[in-house]
Image (cartoon, rainbow, N blue to C red; front, side):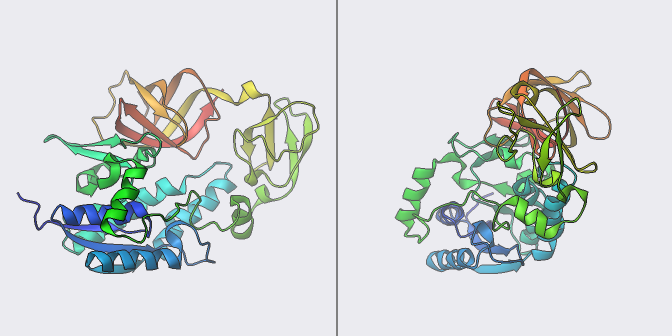
Length: 358
């Protein structure tokens, strides 16, 4: 079937990537509808896709392209699925990943359903990733530019939605995208990009302190593995595994957070080698490919966005969980983060890190 009049909804954040996404699809002959999401109803942060200026920029790009444009209010869903989870995870001693949660529950769930209500065949965003359609199934692949690849954040995107998602800029580098924006005459061509959490105006600790309640927010003891008191912390929920800065320990050598226990309001620290892990368990698995055979499979695994994939054997457990045994110890495997599983540049699936073992 020709795509000349296929309709696509583009999530336009007001940045250059989603602006070029809309322009590329229009040039390819799609019937493009632009939408921007109002996600945060708290104090303005001036960051990312939550700012008034960003919505204004998205509308101006839509006007330039002469495409319909809608502003949608998703504040209630965003607060429930992303913001409340962000606070709850820190209070439970884990380190959340709000961008992956937003992809999983907002963009590629609720927004995709709304796109279908608008008569669209698919939803497009400005993510640096690629989706191949080979006649058998949709395959999620890393973006062509390794420095911008965002496939890690997409590993928990619902597998049954993948066929209706498009990432037009995934085959470009960032400099190429900016040049395309200039060619299309888009005001976002040289707009700086945000690397911060869009709804957090200051530090995550300040946000948690303002929105959370519990024992993990009170001062308590910093201890080593043997239970020996090493110092005092400001609140266990403010710390994350692998953290070195901000401990203020006068022990004459670097110390790192190796465990956070918010129920006991205790932060456990250790030497550098104690931050490394040999195994982890992953929950709420999401597979784009066939589920794992009982004996498992050797895959490349990413445990953080900025980290390189590492080799590990992924073995299925019950209730949508898996055990990952690393070929070599991995630094600061952090509960609450995404684990993404790769075969070459293809993302086979992912899940949420539940527990790490030294």
